[in-house]
Image (cartoon, rainbow, N blue to C red; front, side):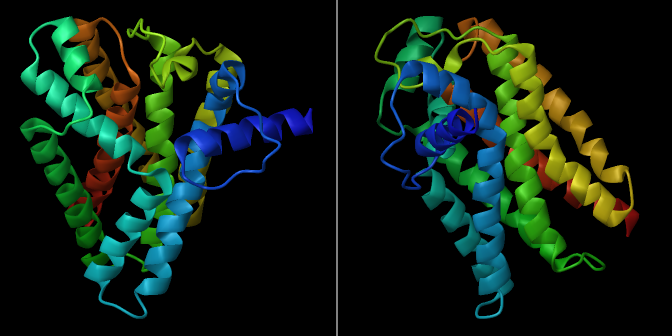
Length: 265
């Protein structure tokens, strides 16, 4: 049982990151599908690397440069997997007017104007939001690394819900995300959500306050809006849509804490 779960975890690690995995890890659609339960747990690892990068580098560089390098570390960890999905969604929905045209554009590996503009603005928002948090009076220097773990885990849990609630729309067999997109069972979803929520709950306990839990409201609104948007235009979701959801949710988390702390000061 333990070996099976380790195999699923390492399969998720191999698919969602560039971290080397043991050679005994197998390759199959079933493993990839079952490993999605660990998607938010991968967020712990990616967010943890970003947090360690920022926590250590701020002693050698300015806060701005430490933040930028922490973003580089998280992007390197995933191979820009989710950022690429966000850019593809910008290109597809920006340049396509029919379901098939949108899907064709998203599958094109070339980066278009909508994708370049969207990705640039997204990364700028991430940096500016994190910089605002770092500069905010009364914000603990160690709260930012913790928040990075919270955001990476919780944003992946938000994306994970699509696999339970909506249908995957690509019919072609060569789709990289197709094995991941098979419907989740409720127990698997709850376990995945638990992995995503645990850092947030720990953060709330650390602060001895329930207000961080309010971030779940804007994340729910993000899920509802994107679900309706994707359903209307393409009838479901794709792997790129999952990546875009994760990126948007991550930014929304940072913006929520920026606005909440600004209002309270």
